[in-house]
Length: 81
Image 1 (tube, rainbow, N blue to C red):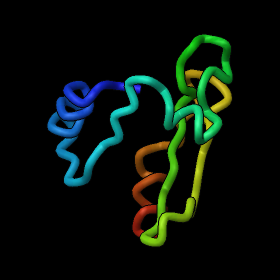
Image 2: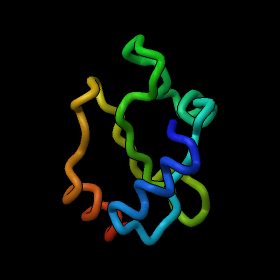
Image 3: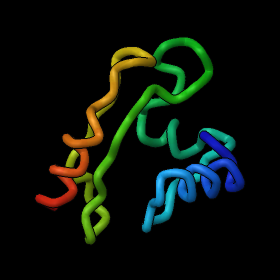
Image 4: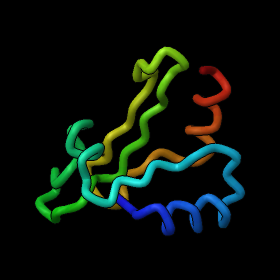
């Protein structure tokens, strides 16, 4: 739910060669069903791998603020898709 400047800083910090989603009003988080699940007015930690045809190929929705897949797991899944 970061704004564009926060997303750009994060992309630069992690050396991302892909675009990061900016969702400052939470519309995308709400559409994906991950907004305010913990009652804190934020999106829960979530990862969605979207295929070339726009389909969700894989998703992970955390059950707490600390519940996140590992970087290695995400990278391995990206290699498969």
